[in-house]
Image (tube, rainbow over all chains, first blue to last red; front, side, top):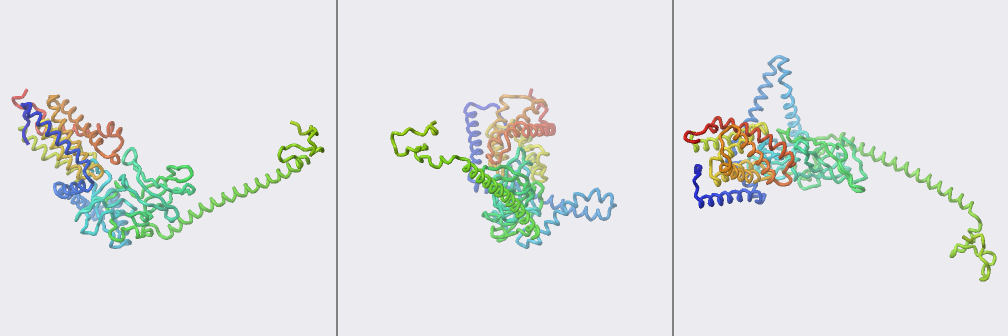
Length: 362
Length: 162
């Protein structure tokens, strides 16, 4: 790197400007490179120059986990007061890991446990790194879940690490259905004013279907990436209704990506859309309850329809009654009106010289 | 401390510290943007092309963690390098206030440049970047920059210079 020399000739100055322009052009060209090339470049940098920093986070997380274990052991020996003061975050972490462990045990060996690392650099808001890769059976597009539900999916895979996107990524989309399997739609993220305000929207629900608040929404398995039955979130409120044909609902996400530290990756057949993991999170009783809720809504709608029909019937009968009453009140002459002119032909009907009946003159 | 030593020292330590804090410790916004700070500090001591190249390399390193807007950091930093080197011809100063203003402005421009080069899907609102995130981050970085300048002796006029 040449030190700054203020005494540049005009020619050198022009050369400097040209070189600087070329460097800036090359930098701008990076934005326009194909995604595969960009991914290859970023992956190469992460596995070479930046590997020590990624490793540092890994080591730190392990050290933190060891410290937590140690603290737990020490906490058992300490007094109750100290235990209460220290144990709250540990308990939370412990509970999270336990529930993840339970989930992994229920799911079987095809679920690969991993640690999620967030780089925190500019532009990396919707991605995280995992310490598992192709050697662990992970492949591109494998779903990533936590003990609470769907986190996202794998985007890039290396031998020992992989890069995943969470549901706040603009490209995230998943086919969804209500837990009872009655209503299908598409879940996609909606960007808030701040990243913390990012939300999920369940779109494409038929207009005549009203979903109750709190109803569980899971993956439908109808897309190409996610298997059926992974928990996505709960219905929060009606977001939009396009007159006459569809509704959209805000969802309360099951998982807040920023809080996730340990995840499971669904590998192999378990991560394909043909698999069904409905009963991994929800018990049969919960599915049954969701179906009963839907049935209750349908019954209520049917009751409303019956009331409306009865009302229509009574109105129809009233109209019939009024019509017959009106018929009775009309003069007999109405029956003999000329259907063409609407005029009574009178007693001299057929005689062209006869005057018209003065009664029907306007 | 000579100029070359200062450049090497800043370029060796600040980016390493930046990635250690951001990637290693996951500090996020709590840590100042030391990568931009390093570029702004050395750009005034380098030629325009060298400053642009330094910006490109540093930006590329940060882009390695970006799947939303790869290249946005590289482009923003390369342009910032050029602007930093060019600023030497326009503004001269060694005072605390001058450096504070230079670093604050540089950090703010960098945030706007990054927003400009980020894709539509990766952006937050322009008002948030322009009025909130950009100035706050830039101020935090400028304060950290003053501390670095004190440590490397950048605030004192060098012997023989007026």
